[in-house]
Each structure stands twice: as C-alpha cells, then as structure tokens.
Amino acid sequence: MKQYNDIKQLKYGCKIIDFMRCDKLAFIISIFLILFSIIIIAIRGFNWGLDFTGGVLIEITLEKPIGVDILRQNLLKANFHDPVVQNLDDKHDIIVRIASFHREIDQETGNKVVSTINKILHQNVIVKRIESIGSSVSSDLAQSSIIALLSALIAILIYITLRFEWCVALGIVLALIHDVIINCGILSFLHVEIDLTIIASLMSVMSYSLNDKIVVFDRIRENFRKTNNISSYNITNISLTQTLNRTLITSIITFLIILILFVFGGILLKNFSLTMLIGVTIGTISSIYISCAIALRLGMKREHLLLQTIEKDETNEF
Image (cartoon, rainbow, N blue to C red; front, side, top):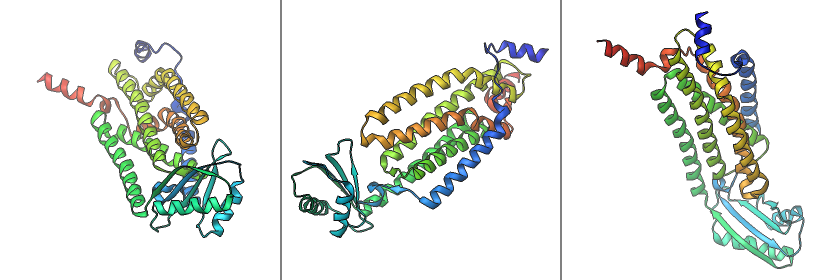
C-alpha cells in the first residue's frame, strides 16, 4: 500500500506503460541489426566520396539531355578511371566524379575532363563548378573525421559520468554507438556516398540522441528524489511514460522538418537529410529501450543518480 501511495505521489497523470517488459526483445532486435550492419559494412564497404578518396567533381549544364551511361562509357574510353556520372533534379544538369586513387588531382585535371566532355557531346556545355581534392588532403580529412567522432564519444562518456554515474554513462554511450553502427550499416546497404556532410550529420544525430537520453534520465533522477520505496524498474517505466509525449512530439517535428529538406533540399542535402532521418528514428527508439535497459542491467539504483545529494546530506549530519 505504501508503494502504491509513493507511485501516486509522482503524479504521472496517465496509465504507466511497461516499456521494460520488452527489453529482451529490444536487445535481440538491436543485436541483429548491429550484426547485420557490421556484415553489410564488411561485404559492401562504404561509398567514399571525393572528400575521402580525393579526385575531381564537375557540375555541368547541357543544352540537350544525354544518357548518363553514354557519357560514362565515353569517359572510360578516354582513359578516365571509373567515372561516376549522375543526373541532378533537372535532366540538363549532370555531375561527374572521378576519383584520384592516390594520384594527384588538380584544377588542370578538371579542365581536361571538361575538354573531353565537350568533344564527346558536341554541344555547348556550361560548367557550373569544378572541385578538386588531392589524395593527401583526403587522407587528412578521413583521419580528422574519425578523431572527431571518437573524441565526441569520449567527451560524452566523461560528461555523463560526472553528471550521473558510470552505469548510466555506459548505457548512454553504448546506445549512441548502437545508433551510429546501425546508421552506418544502412548507409552502406543503400550505397550512400560518404562525405564530410555525412560526418556532420552523424555528429548531429549523436547530439540529438544524447539530449533525448539525458531528458529521460533527468526525469528518472527527479522521480527517485520524490520516493524511496519504488524499484528502479518501476521508476524507469514511470519516467519513460511521463516523457513519452515530449519524446514523440519532438521526434515527429524533427522528422518532418528533415523530411522537407530531403524532398525539397536538392541533391546536395539529400544524403545529409537521409542520414538524419535514419538517426532520429533509431535514436528515439534507443532512448526508450536501449540506454535505460542497459543501465538497469548494469544495476542502476537510486544511489547512482542521487550520489552527490546523498553525500551532501551525510556531510551535513556531522
């Protein structure tokens, strides 16, 4: 009866949803998705963009549309290795990418590609932009991107450990790693080109997911302060129920905004917004199940979330 009164004092205002009842199923699905992602990445690899491989990118506008396969075959005959030719939203606009494969690429290489295209098409070609990245620069960018992602995870681990306790910090960081691995697996499966905008999108996804998880654990800590006799399992379910509306509304609004970017943002924002769409969806699910379920499995207790308050009270007693 006392436990019932303590639960009633939390004023959750709705029926408690037993989220943690499905934690084993959530773990099984997550492990399957992680293994699937790792296998896909090992088999297919990533479609690295020019930011990481080096090369030249040329955007052109044609008077008359032409099939991309025809242009690709003619570039191959002109001894350009493995050119990638894509139509933009308008069939008259074309992007040509040629990787360096550790050969130095400069502006002159781009001009040679444009000259070759002019000879192939026999029509006026308007060059909108030429971008070239050398192999040494692309290697530095790849290292910097990896360091940035790892540094973000380490900083998050330190911050959450100082704010809560190690079991909560580990649960949040493992959930973030879970989000990134599955996101990368889907990008590999869809053969999405990986460039610096994708790295920025992944870091944005980590920030969004982290904020969502901190909100949940802050509510768990707040509920622990209001009562002493409710188990961590029940407190977690109550807190998730209380934050469910906020989580869903925030996620839906964010999802719709990113969807608008995906549909109307053009080809330059398509891969960025696709990564964000995947990340927001996975991050919302992991905020409800993975991070909290891992923290409970690691033995999360009231003392872990109220450690500083308890120590302060013990000091005041003396």
